[in-house]
Length: 345
Image (cartoon, rainbow, N blue to C red):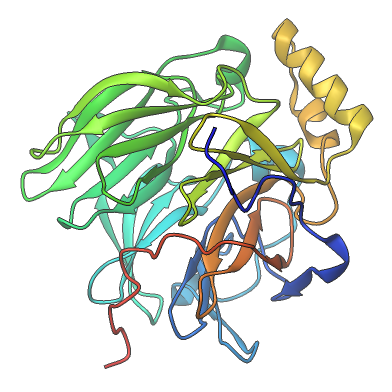
């Protein structure tokens, strides 16, 4: 066991949490700039820019500038209708590459909200549910696709292993690993030797060794074989702990370098979570059961990002929240690849 892990015995102090932003729509992914600016995915087809002082500016295509009309749970969360930016990553010039969950595409958006389609097919086939995108130091983009099933919720009971990972480099997009159950967020360790992959429907995190040519090695489970919920977002801290959000159960946990699981925050509804887990095991989950499992701080907790000048402020994203809950961590996060890039020059 690694000694002196700053997370062992520590939990989030709910009383000290503060909420950043207001009237957000589906703030699934959060990007933090070094100057304190935050960008969060927005269901109106772009992103919300939140300045260090709290001022907000909705950055979306002009046709999407008006607030999205209210829609029912099935249309918005199950059928995923319309443009729904999900995972995001900065390009070196400050533009944002977007995995669009609603349009099943990968797009690029500039800082004025102009969007262009990068691609929506791979190997001649429709892309599927584009979930997350990550940029590495060599400049490659790593894309996850959760499933090709529609609606995506059907893939949970089916335990469909149709999720995959693609890499985008000078050769274009290509699939480099497949057979995942609900591929979600991916992260790399500090040395970028391993790619850590959330398999939401299998309730586990896997990892694959990254080869110099962008291919990936064999897959192995990282940490527990089964997590106590559906993992969604992940982020490494500087100590090597992998922080993981459990969506719907609305818990925040961490996998230590020893593989130990620590609970950092539990905001779930116990009765609804028990029902969710029972129906998951029986493969009888319905959207209604999933909708009932929801916390209050960051409803359907989805992502997490380390920010602030010392990278010790944690921001929580969600699928059904309207703000970004934040709190101080006892250990900083890993500096993101864009941390020293100047987008304002």
